[in-house]
Each structure stands twice: as C-alpha cells, then as structure tokens.
Length: 435
Image 1 (tube, helix red, strand yellow):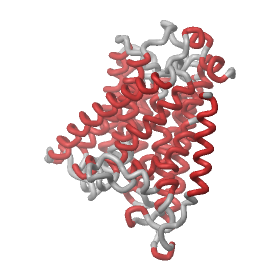
Image 2: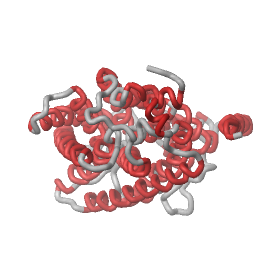
Image 3: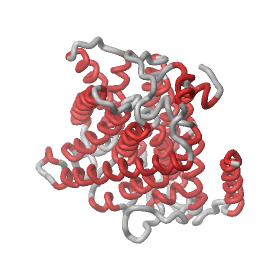
Image 4: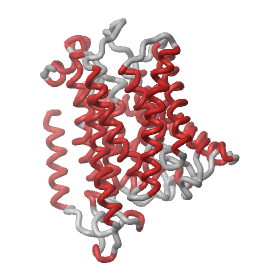
C-alpha cells in the first residue's frame, strides 16, 4: 500500500494545479520592471540551478564506486521534489506574510500554488515576484542536497525523500523567513546574511552533524578510502564555482555595482581558500592534492556567501584563508573521533558557514553596502554581537530540529539500509543500477 502514497501525492498536486491556476495579482502595467535586472536574475537563477548537478559530481567522485550513482541521485532528485514543495507552499512559508508577528514563518496561503506572483514586483523592486521565487527555489534545492555527504553510503532512498521534505518545511523555511523576510526575527535584529551562510550552509552543516551522529558509523570503512573519480570532484568544483556567481552576485537582485562586488569577493575568497588549503597541507607534510584544492575552493565559496555583498574584495582574501585553515583543522579533528561524517559536510559547510558569519560581523562595511552595517574591524561591536547570538540560536535550532526530524523519519520509514545492502552498495541495493 505504501508504494501508492507518493503517486497519490502527485495526484493531489495535479488537482491543486487545476484549482489554483496562479492568476495575476495585479495589472502588469501597474509595475515598473528593469529589463537589465530581470535579465541578470534570469541568468543567476540558471547559474544557481547548475550548482546542484555540480554538487552531485563533487560528492559522487568522493564516495566508493559502488555508491556513486546513489550519491549523485540524492542531489539530483532535490531538483524535482523540492521544486514541487516550493511551488505548492514552500515559498509561502519562507517569504509569505509573517504569521503572528513572530518573525519565524510565513503564511502558507500567501503564495500558495504560486498565487499572487504575477504582475507585481518583489518588495516594490525591479524584478517580478515569480522570478524572485524561482531564484530562491534554487537555494532551497541545493540545501538538503548538501546534507547528503554526511550520510552517504548508508541511507535508504525512500527515507531520504521523507527527511528532506520535513527539513525544507521545518528547518529551511523558518530560517529563510527569519533571515531574509523584512519581518523576520533575524532580519529585524540586524543580522547580515547576503546569500545564505546562515540559511543554507549552517543549516545543512548542523543537519549533517546530526545525521552522522544519528545514523552512526558505516559498517565498512576502509583504512585508506579511495575516491571513485577525482575527475568528478574537479568537474563538480568547477560547476559549483561557476554557479556560485549566480548564488552570490545574484543575491544583489539586480544588475548593479553590488552584484559586481559580490562576484569579485566570491572568486577571490574561493581562490585564496583553495591555495590556503593546499599550502596548509604542505605545511603538515602532505603532498598537494587535487582533492584538497577542490575542497578548499568550496570552503572559500561557503565562507564568503554571507559576506559577499558586505565586505571588500581585499577582505575576502582573509575570509577565504581563515575559513580554509579552520575547516582543515576541524576535518583533522573529526577524523580522530567516532563521528562518521562521510564527506566532512560539517567541517566544510557547517564550520565554513559559521566562519563566514563571524567574519561578516568583523569585516562588514557600509562603504560596500549602505544597507548593511560596520563590523568589529571598523570599531563597532553591535553587528558582531548580533551575529554571535544568531550563530548560537541557528546552530541549536538546526541541530536539534534535524535530530528530531531524523527520529520522526526513522519512525515512518527506516533510515539505514541493512548491512547486506550496505555491503552490496546503494547503487545496486537502492536503484538496481551500476556505474
């Protein structure tokens, strides 16, 4: 009987599509759009979408050969499942009218089935609401995909779909609303997160740690793990870096100087982090590796995400270098523990996101973005203190919340594959496919 449930849900979605066709909320003539801004945001939306297939290659190349397809599919499937959730009510939860003035969640009816998204600009700006909704969708798509690296090689696919559905509703949407909606609690507090260091990377990082602890260690962990395809990792890194320009520069929501600055800080921080990771490995007596350079580049991209539109290009060098060294040290620490975070999602994305948040509180300057604030480096402590408070709150919420959702998912559908399925590999046991 359970096998009919997913298809039944799709039938409900089809019925809703007929009942709520998404009619225009206002006359297009009543809104003044900017063609250049729209063009840039269309491109940025496409760039951010490309990041999820990029992540699939990035993760897929690191796991064992018998788990490459399953790992890549866990990223790819998010483009399908999360899109449906977002269109039906996810965007409303994240960016709909605030419920009860608490600044935590939006009204699910605000943009239900993409109602009220045509013929009106987002927050009176220069791009349509529907374009903003699709741009933000790509952020929602990649966030649960980031978590998959922590429980790679040991999670049942059906259970994974349930977990990411719950994660988007109960973790991601509240954080997006609290951080980016004008009525959100963190937004009103003055917390700065330009493109998702808090909403995307910290939430995914803490969910990854919760997942690694809940699912426990893999049954078979070779002493010297051999990644399936380093070439996949390099390809994935290139796609991620390319798409990240839409991720960060697109968050300026227009074709303007701020977007250009965010593009500059993004590429500079990533470059600095890649080299810092390699040089730090050499300092530790290791050979420079392609894997290390790729991981470092991604850590730099993660760390600069919250700061991209608030710091200077020169300061982005510091962000990349500091984040790479700290994340590298946490990877070393994690390897000496019993925590089986398969692809070190928490040390790279979780810690990288936290470092980015703290460094934003230090280096943010109004000279880059007048809508922001001056950080600790410029003699003001307020922003840094706010970021410390938000960091603790988000960490607790994402970790505890994810742990609870993992438990709920496990009650609905067993999370871990059997020892026999794990030995055979998830490609065969979950999908009956081989590389």
